[in-house]
Image 1 (tube, helix red, strand yellow):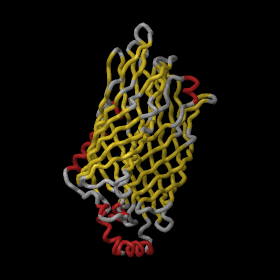
Image 2 (spheres, helix red, strand yellow):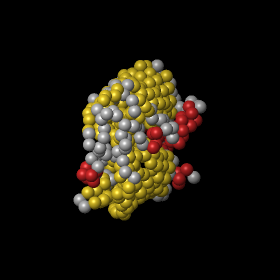
Image 3 (cartoon, one colour):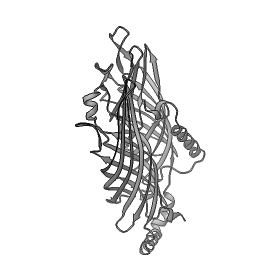
Image 4 (cartoon, one colour):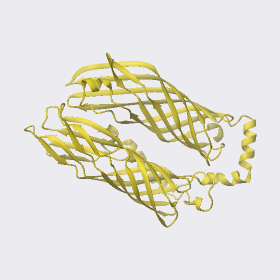
Length: 432
């Protein structure tokens, strides 16, 4: 199981502390978009918790006599920290749900861990969220699933870590009471069948949980309404034009956020030599950046650093991967839809990639290489006006061809998509 999910983690504790702090005061009023729909009422931040229950699922294993047996997964429960925001004046909801710890089953000589990882959720409300109203929703999510099975009947019984990125369909109802959202939902993972190596050579069909039920509570905050009066009176435009003519809207920015990297595809080395190893899963890491914003062309020039890795341990094979990357990127805003601004641009990075492997406790590979990577940056900002001292950004970086050669005509794939759902962008020259 990924280290970040094995027990309650510092990240989980920090999430809980942040939630308690923000819930200690009523910091905003929800449904401000019911009065009128403006760019400053387009989105509202929310934070909360939910409890998710999985239903169903089966796996296979080899008993002490080498015979195949079936194991029912039953139900598992996981509390999660939720952070995101309603958008499009209450008609959409985007958020991520972070598991706070991983449930575990230990029966019949099998130690099994399974849960959904950090889920990214997109919901649509045909009737917008409003106070004292029950509203249905439909949606879809990007839901990584983690499964790992250890068999005490085998000499090297640690099974591979199975990572499945699914796109379950969502449905449910949300009740809104001022700044509070209470929700009951269900998710259907229609792609719930997969295969799993029960030893190095024996691959069997398994069934992942097809249904999930969740109950959640979220607290809504508004961070942009205070700037609406100045915008409507024309003061914002006047100040923007004056500062732009003086060149004072250009300036440095700092970015900080938590990003996830989806490892794409299977490595040709593992396909040929270690076929029982599953494709690598998802890595989490801090995403730190510095850049310069140019007001007239409305574009960002930036540098970002990410250091992260992944590891796997299955049936006597241990692999460890590490990526340290500094990326230079230029991103141009495409249009402004009521403060929702998508952007896109090229990325060039300096990469240091490393790979280590041991088989039955004997070192079999140790490779380290520096190279240049090429990718694409895209995402969106929530920016009510260009005078904000801070904004929230969602960004993705795609590296389709990054790899590390470890043997003749065989490599380890480092191609991935990095997804930073919420990054805080600060403009120091607008604060002081």
